[in-house]
Image 1 (cartoon, rainbow, N blue to C red):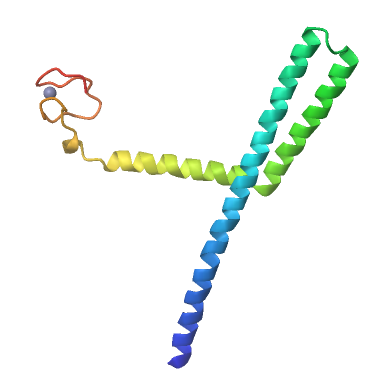
Image 2 (cartoon, rainbow, N blue to C red):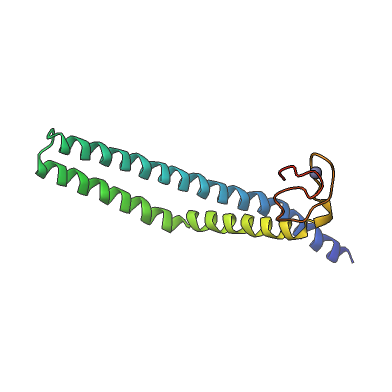
Length: 137
Ligand SMILES: [Zn+2]
């Protein structure tokens, strides 16, 4: 009996330790993904500047092509890094989950709860105007 209790106790302790560790790890991945996405954004902006410099003939075509190639390589590197950490996958998964939760919540919303803000008349989901007072819903 004591063995079972200590076994449960160990499991509980493991759970307490593991959950925050797991949460922290996914937070780090998220942070890293955000950093990489930010880096990509910055590189894109410098590409935009280079294009402008090239168009205004501040840069030779040779320099322009070289600098663009460098930046495109950096973007690809950031992309592969994002793919490696799986951060974006995590993000997409969470976004999808949030969207699905929103849909389910929407379905659970009883139609009887919808009432006109002006007169309190009940209305059906999808109605644009109140059938009682004509107020926009
Ligand atoms: Zn109304």
